[in-house]
Image 1 (cartoon, rainbow, N blue to C red):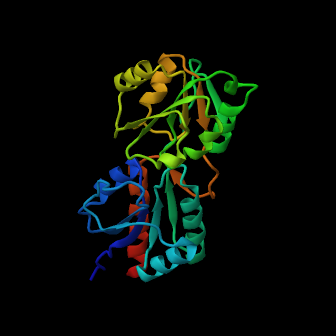
Image 2 (image 1 turned 60 degrees about the vertical axis):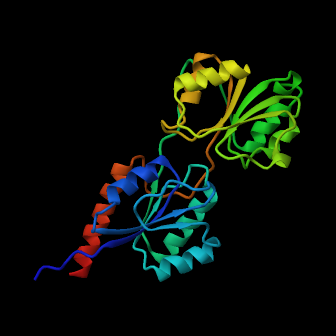
Length: 266
């Protein structure tokens, strides 16, 4: 008799819109047994109808034990492009256990002739650029800071500027630059929203990470429309791995591995 295909046991390291799309494709598909893992940075996240775990693994050893205990057969790393530590840990651990790993990562944004971007390698470098008295630091600016609530402390080095910080949840007050206006709001924001924010607060500069994708691209469009200079933080380097840009491509990869696992089980 033909073998019954076994469900492929998958760990999805998530936290992006691509994660959501992939989980929707996997929901109800008996060929796969996925578990979604979220870091737990956002309170009360929207969860799919899949088994989920919230919080870290406890480093490489913790992830190693979890993968073994749950007999994981494939890993999808769909973490944020700036979650370099988790991606590095996942890559090393997958290689050690011989588990196939796929990186699901949306492409970077690309500047056009209408954009005025200054590329920097890190949050610290962005803050240094704003603090430098020979450059942007000589004149007080109004800076739209969209780097996340946990990465505001470096900008205390440039207290002469007025920062407009938008965050889903309020950051710790002691981590904010002294002249900060906090906007507590959850996207998505369209171009009209972002243009209204620029005009309301008199924003002169944008600081952002090159996250890519369409979910937060409206702020880039608004900066372009208003001719605002952008301090663009480059993505951190991650361990080389097979990479796709869409959830559909990731699903195709999983189907190939599910088919291969079935053949081995016959």
